[in-house]
Length: 189
Picture 1 (cartoon, rainbow, N blue to C red):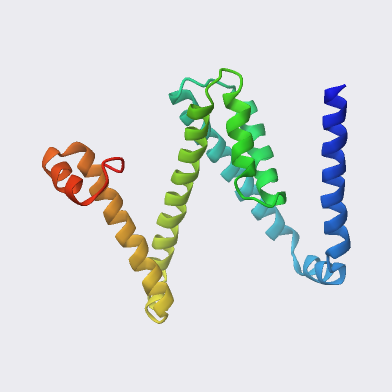
Picture 2: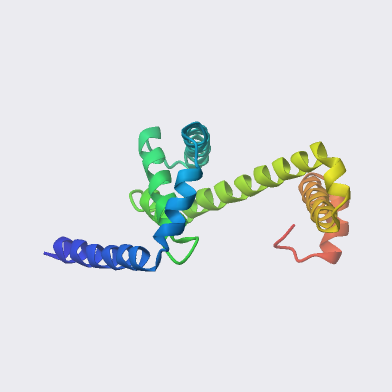
């Protein structure tokens, strides 16, 4: 009985969101942009998107395996898709991440470890995206130097990488660790 009630409530909430989207969307503008899309653009986009999901799911599986949370790749892939769908359609961008952590952590009662895998997946994804951003800006150096905002953004990215590298080295070096202990809280080091 509880499963039926939960399903019914989920269907009502999903229907309400879908109805809200259908009513508030400017469909003439949507059709205008759909007509502008060429089919080969869509195919390339879908291939890149699928490749990204494939790599990200594999990365998440490796992270989960390192925490002794073992799931078949196929299930991890499905959960990654579901989590992304939830992130795209729920008001919060972490709802899908919470779902993924709960989905893999509940079975073995390893919620903390599962949450850490999702968090690390997000962090590595962010680092990867910033590396790509930095590299693409270097390729377009002429354009970048003409815009102060791009220069500032690249400086911040470079500074964050330097700080990350110093923090990484501090975990290995006792001398640097002592210096950092004086200026940073111990939980960071």
